[in-house]
Picture: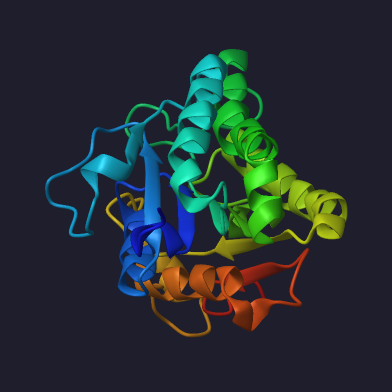
Length: 250
């Protein structure tokens, strides 16, 4: 017999333990959504959303086999929702740095680092989207890929592997919108700029002087845009990449 819980809209979100992911979970929870979180860390007791531990999957996206196991577990958990998934947010990403926080360039980045970065930042999103395709189609759901301003310009802090993985994810978003659209699934991306999180690089304050709005973005502002793209308010928006950077791209 269905319960009230079964009827809630459901979100699967990767990289939920901090920053933008953490803010998004709080935003969707506030709207009454069920949120299934995935991250490398175990569920944090500091996280304020309800049913957190029960709907958390500890997952290392750099492990292809682990991604497959997680997809099976997510599909099992969605059975209570009638096999419906309203939204998938591919937020998890890794951005390796040199010792001391230096930028990893295209000449010296080891190939194994390129492979790890692309597995987490590029391959995992399409693996999850394909693995959860049936559930997304059933709900006429929405996919949001989190790209970055560094996908379209050389950045003083972001390494080459990270930047090119984000550029590839932006292109993938366009391709997915074309492929998933006939099944009623919308696919969009958000490209954040300098957002105030715990992982900002030293020197970011200098970058702020070049941003038209002259401030860092807040994780809550990014979460609001993610929610918009997963809501009925954006029902005719697909294949878009929305810049959230205070005008840094202009």
